[in-house]
Amino acid sequence: MGCGSGPATLHAGGLCGQVLVEKSLKGWKEVEYEVVRDVADNCITVCNMENFDPLGVHTGESIVIAPSQTLTDDEYHMLRTTAIKVVRHLGIVGECNIQYALDPHSNDYCIIEVNPRLSRSSALASKATGYPLASVAAKLALGNLLPDLTNSVTLSTTACFEPSLDYVVTKVPRWDLSKFDRVSREIGSAMKSVGEVMAIGRTWEESLQKALRMTDPAIAGYQPHDEFVAESEEELNRSLQVPTDTRIYAIAEAMKRGYSVDRIQSLTAIDPWFLWKLKRINDMGQILSEYTPKTLPAGTVLQAKKSGFSDAQVAKLTGSTELEIRALRKAMGVTPFVKQIDTMAAEFPAATNYLYMTYNGDEHDLDFEDKGTMVIGSGVYRIGSSVEFDWCSVSAIRALRQLGKKSVMVNYNPETVSTDFDECDRLYFEELSLERVLDVYEQEGCEAAIVSVGGQIPNTCAAPSLADRAPRPPALPTPTPRAAAAPTPRQTHPDPPRPPAGSRSRWARPASTSPARRRR
Image: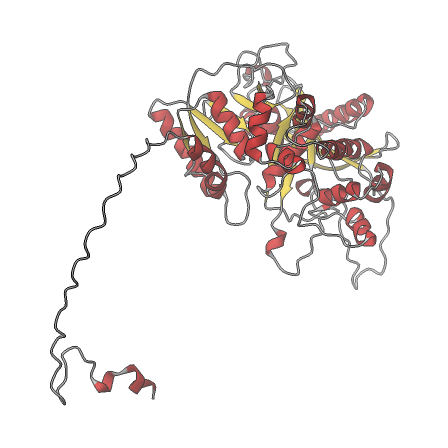
């Protein structure tokens, strides 16, 4: 049996001399469904998710995409129907997580596990859809029915609906393995990640690049990274074959060296759809490197932003600075649009304050009249920064509400209370970077920003950006130079009298207590 998802490591000790392998599922896709059911047998699937890595890597260790991007319509409905049948057969009331292994070359599938409870994936599914799974599951356990519960997105329809997403969510784990010496960086069925991030975009390229930057401020996006170094082709091939915490950067390095999509797919068993999207990002980076800030066309800038490139990435590729590229694209009219989390497929108007920014749009979904106070969150959990900073952020939001002030929360951690959209007046599920903090601050017209409650990231990234835009005191007039004054005669004082020879000063240390005497 496995540990979470993926195959288990079997140890045949002295009690058994052989291991019988009935079927290998290596290279199969891993797909999850979140299902809820009430006592009246109303049953729906809230969210389906797909792993970037093939079967063998724990869901908590893999990049996860919601909704699934590579399933056909037949495959999606086949697994959805099976999930509902399983939940009804087992008589589960509340929330359930079902994980599948799906053969990419046929409709053959296996159920890896059924979790009749909230799992780590449930938190991701809740934030990805705006459907509060924990709250709904608790009410269903008390006997409430899905048609009687209110839809948290529309505030007017019922919770007995299946969300329809017009955006893409990408979850990327955060590892801190580099803090330890001689530790294996391979990932598998065991959990090694210390946290995770979630990014929202209108395309997977946009969503992925945002998510990679969220894991660490030092990461610019999908491109080769300093943490991954492969000096030889054999070393690079092994890094592609064996899943590690840096495999996404190994793929970026392979594409930079000219590896084809087919060759990378044969080494990684990752679905070609994802690899072709990654190649588009790689090609966009090569196009940008052919320009300078003076020759960079507005259309190319817009296409790069739609593919998830940050101002810092564009600046590095074109030989400029982040602030220069920011000023350039704003002069070109290339700015992001604010979108609501809308899971109703435009059948009903969304009334949620759950927001994200994207360049794949042409208008804002709401107006900006509140002029609230921005609270910058703590970002991803990591060694040395955990839930204590999220408690500070939530406390700041609640204090603003008590003072009668509107709050604007910016954070991207799906495991935190601060990213519950009912905690604040407006929630931006976005990066905590110089570029995005300024985008939100300027678009909302915030009257102030609180950077002291989120730990290190807000102070190192957001505080300088806001300080540069704060009003500065007027410059003081330059003082008129004065004529050199005559030097003042130096006053001399007589030396203090010395004690007579043989006498002891009252400040002298007794010989018996001298440190040198004691050491001897």
